[in-house]
Image (cartoon, rainbow, N blue to C red):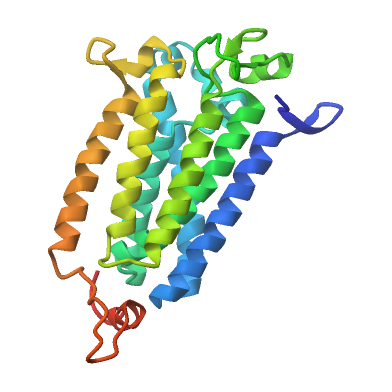
Length: 285
């Protein structure tokens, strides 16, 4: 659609990069705001956000290379090519990398994982919304051909050169489908946060809703053969989504029935949920 925000000679500022950076900034601001409500250390949360972003970028690239391992074995030089560097990679790889970093760094600075993850989850959804708009501007993550009236036709040769999107063919705007889903998930999680009843509730719902939305969208998203497992029944993202949905269901059940549960409003003692949260900062996860 609009892959180049600015160009001067051989220098190009991609729209994708600007939108991804904007998504990171907006998501981090949201995480800091919610972390303050949880009584978490803002400096530690800020540092964690930066480290998680770097780990997520690395994880997304590594899973991208793993998915197309045969291609990269035959063309190892393309691992460091501009198109690979510009590509956002695979989101689930970034999610796993980010969670791994959060576990390691959180333990190091004594941030309770579930409370911290709850503060980050709405911001991740909001940041991902901007990221998918970036995908749409670049042309990557395109959909299957369609005759529907809202099909999108890419025509910029630069998009085809950098990400390989087919030109002059009406395609499902899967980037916009996912952006809309992410925005709806953010709105739901942000509203749910105000009524939070146990630590891990926001993270659990995020890990339930996003994979479910992605699972559906994958049916109209274009894939290479390397993206399929199990006799091409489902894509790699769909298999990963099924695992995450199962984990999310377990997390919601476990957290709601364990010591992570917050005290409900008590009229006799005048305690509110927010007060319980503030008191909970002295406890564990």
